[in-house]
Length: 85
Image (tube, rainbow, N blue to C red; front, side, top):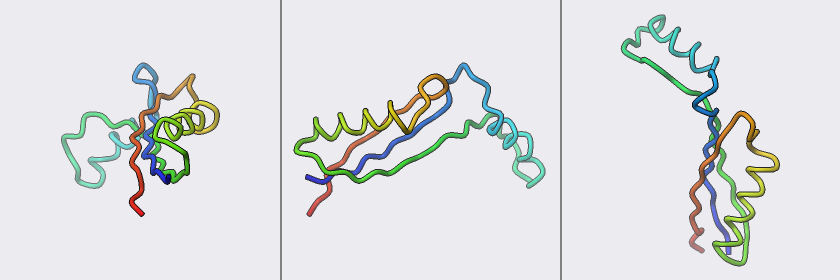
């Protein structure tokens, strides 16, 4: 079966996010006002093949833990959807 995983990787809330701070600081320069905070992360869409949804979840977990996310500084969440043939 084919699955699509939608993965969001964000810095831990306890850590400073210099990219987010820079975005917020510069919003008024492009006439956007009222933005108090922004956090910058990554979104990854991954298509994979697995025998079951449970096996697909295990593959995505492994990919996030071993390669996609730096678990010291980042956290991740994902959703998994079967691909209709």
